[in-house]
Image (cartoon, rainbow, N blue to C red; front, side, top):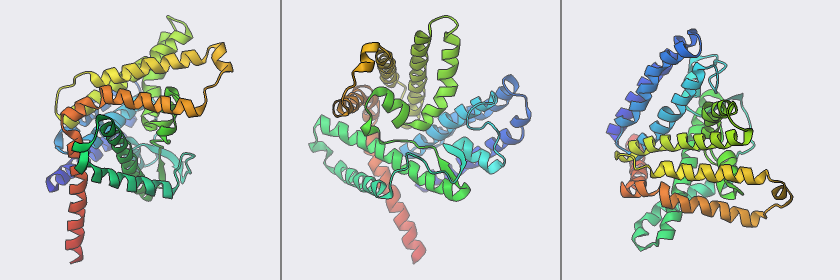
Length: 339
């Protein structure tokens, strides 16, 4: 753990220096080609940072915040687009806006803000899940699939809520909502567009969806261009997930994760096309039916294509062990500090 924390400090020092370079030098370069060339060395560095870690949590977090979010934001910034445009007024804000999913408003109140008691319940459920790992040898495949799905969702939400508190205390800026109760999704469009991984959705739209749709409309109808843009967005997301899985598992990509996003991209685009039909506008499925169908489809395809590479690598054995190890590490440090 101490070795990982030392690497964590080194990675953050490198990140702060690199982002400061972008703030002081790249911002003074004309947008598009020259500015893109000036930030590319930083993007390459951010591709390498997750390799400094051996733990699942540190490598996964650095891949998500630096390799994915920061790189996409800097590329969009090269074209005067994305959350870094217009330029934040101070270096500290530029660093935070680059590395975290930050809103530029002061003291905003998110419409998707969950009550504190709901968050507390989720923390308790997550604690119970950690305890349940002692009995996974007695669980059925279906129970394991539910356990793994809840673990990923709750750990992401709890972790980002902690980051949110730290950022708010530092800058008075709110984090973009990461989740909006995804288990209440009534369709795949609702799940991916308004409930799951919303910060990534906000980045992929200007980076992939909008340019692909704009270019495709030159050669095809608007409906076909929209379908192609949706598919391209999910394909890029799949490719980035393959890279993140490589950082976490240290194994070569198998393509399963990409196929997961291709399947969801095709199904989401088809769903949107069907909804536009006249007869579908007149008929609306009950939420009592659409919610279990949507969540069931997501969970089943996750077990089919998304989880297998992680299960084979032993990641789900490492996840609870690392959390418990970190808790023991903090307790040990606090106990020594108190004594």
